[in-house]
Image (cartoon, rainbow, N blue to C red):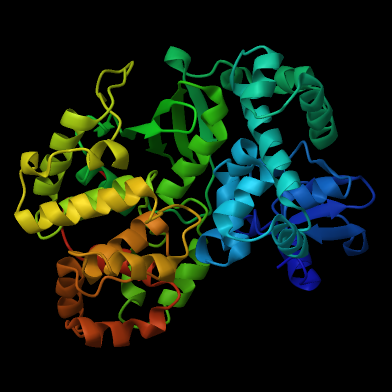
Length: 490
C-alpha cells in the first residue's frame, strides 16, 4: 500500500487508525516516522515519504515519533493472509527465529538461500531480515524499559541484544532517547508492572473487535491444567524457546490486557507474537467484513456482530493433537481426553495463582507413550500415534512458516485424517484465512437454517464468493448456534 501515495496521504489526513501497521509515514522536515493515525497536525504531502515497515524507516535514518509511538501499532495483516515467501519469513522473524538461529537458520526453514530471502524482503519491505529483527528487538527493549524495574544490562540481553553498547546505540537511534530517559518518561502505572513479577502489557488491535467467539471458543475448549477462564481473563501455560510462561489475556474496549509471567525474559517477543496470533489481533476486520457483507445471507450476521476473529493457537503441534482427540466426539469429551494426556505426560509448572499445573506434552513425549494406555477407540488411537510420530521425527512440520496447501495435503495423506481434521488444523493452527469446514456439523446446521446448501460439495461451491476470507465466514456461521463457543464467558 505504501506505493499508493494518494491513498496514504488521505489516510494520514483523516488520521485513520485502520491503516496503522499497513504503512508508516516518514516526515522529511523533522526526521521522524509516525503511524497514519498520529494525532499531530499532518505535514505537507511533499514532506511525506511512505515506508512499508518500521525497519525501513529506521534504515532510512528516521526515528520513532514520541507522540503516536509507531512501534506499538498492530502488525500488518498482510503477513497473516498470505502464504508466500515474504509472509512466511515475517511470521518466523516475529517468532524470534533470526535472534535464535540467525539469517541462515531462517533460510534453512524456508528452503531458500540467504541471498534470495534478503533480496525478497528488501524489495517488498525496504529492509532485510537483520534490520527487521533489530526493529523487533528495539520494541521489546522499550517494553521492558517501561514496564519493569530491571537493570538496563538485563533488559539489553533479554531483548536479544549482543551487548549493552549495541542496546544503548539502538535505543537512542530509534527513539531519540536514552534508555534512562525512556524509563523516566514512562507513566508510573506502566513502570509499576503487575503483581507477582508479571509483565503488564497492552496488545493493540484494529477495530471493530468482537471478543465473544474468540474468548468463548478458547474458554469452552480449555484443557484443565493447561488453560482456564478466571475473573474475566483467559489464562494458559506457554512452552517457549528458552523456558515456559503463563499468560493472562482479558478483552477491553480498545486493547487486550496481557499479563505475562516468564521463566526467561528472552521469550518476551515470542510470547507476545504467539498471543497476538492466538487472538488474531493483526487481522483487518474492515476488509474482511466488507467482503462478507456482499453476500446477502452473511450480511445480517456481520452487521449484528462485526469484527469476529478466528481463534487460533500458540502451539501448532498441540492443536493438531487436540484436533485428533476431538474427532467425532463432543467438546467435553475432547477436553477429557486431552486432560488425561496432560496429567500423565505434561511437564509440571508452578502457577502463582494456582489454577494451571502443566504444559501440554510435546510430540516427543507422546511418541513414547504405549498406545494400549490410551483410552480411545483403536482407529483414533492409531491416528494419534501416527501423527505424533511424524511430528516427533520431523517428517511433518507444523508452524508459522508452513505452506498451507502443501501441509494440508500432507495431513490428508496420513491414515485417519479426513477433510474435517485437516481443515480445522489449517484454520486454527496454520492460520489459513481461507480454510473452510463444509463437513463440520455446526456449519451444516447453520447452512440449513440460513437456506444455504447443506451438503459439503454444494456448500463449498456456494462459499466460493467468500474467498479469500472463508475462515471468517466460518465464525459467522458458527455464531448462529447457541453453543458456548460463541459467547464470552460470564
